[in-house]
Image (cartoon, rainbow, N blue to C red):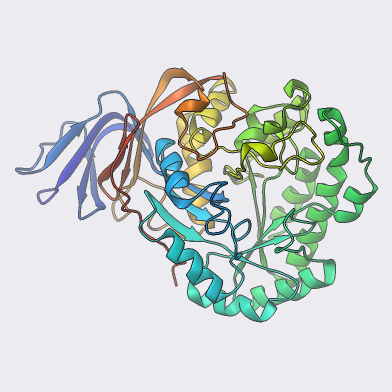
Length: 446
């Protein structure tokens, strides 16, 4: 610690070994030591005494739609990363679709990177996309540093990112498995979606019926079988159907290399409370019933579900009409994900250690960043979120940093106020004030 430049001290530091009073030493943007709370501060080092506020590793959100370039009226790297920093997120991985062009070739990846350069308040990496006609682009994208490949198993909602049929999925997965890459999948079966009742209109019950659980369950079972056959690495995105959990648990027990995420809105919002016409609650797959939510929490507790990410998918307000059939499907959650999950977790008996595991350690590991991100431990980036876990606030859309401030959480009282966010030992957000963007563009570790 003798050469430390910065020391952060708190009575509640969340380390991989548990929560304890500690002093965290930082040099050159890296954590160099985690020492007793009363350790002497080296001469010349700056002390940040956080009191009883909790010091968390910065969150890693591996499911974010930034939409830049091409749909920057929906969001953009500047606003998305400010919102992330305001919510204690220090690393995000951008999804390949909703931007124009989508990240499906190395050239398109370079376009995305140029759009992000100089705009990021936090660190940003990129997923590639797997389309029916870009199998030959997958290995070059992998070599260029994307973190894996997003595929839709049902229509994506944007024409430039078509979904994979079963044979196309098999072909793409075989190619990705050949270099031990990761396929991440929006898993809904298009046949079940097509056969479900499609009424349209403002009733949430009609929208829920149009995206039945069996669509998720069937697609996930097929994806798991493909992964089993090829010993491939697959990840199930935004799980909402608890009926799929037994298949996932059995696959994991058999050694199939499958991981699973869910999202704050599935854990904290329920179908029973969605007002008719309130399409700020629309997402695909949909928010389901309270009993379903209980089972998702149980699956997080027992490890069947690995992590929690936002699936931040904004749009302009005009696309959020009161017709659930035609409104854009997506929930903006970057700034509010940590308080929302912590609010739900604490009433179910979970601690902040659980939240950190789901939203930082496991997401960092999913992206292959576990040796650099997701823990307060020597050798890791000095990325932190300072949280007042026992304080509450009421969500005011006007206080959000998202470009479009429509939110399903408006008016809700949440626990957990993010005081400040630190990136490699540098405070990038404190009490709603931001420094100039100094985030880095990340590539997959080789």
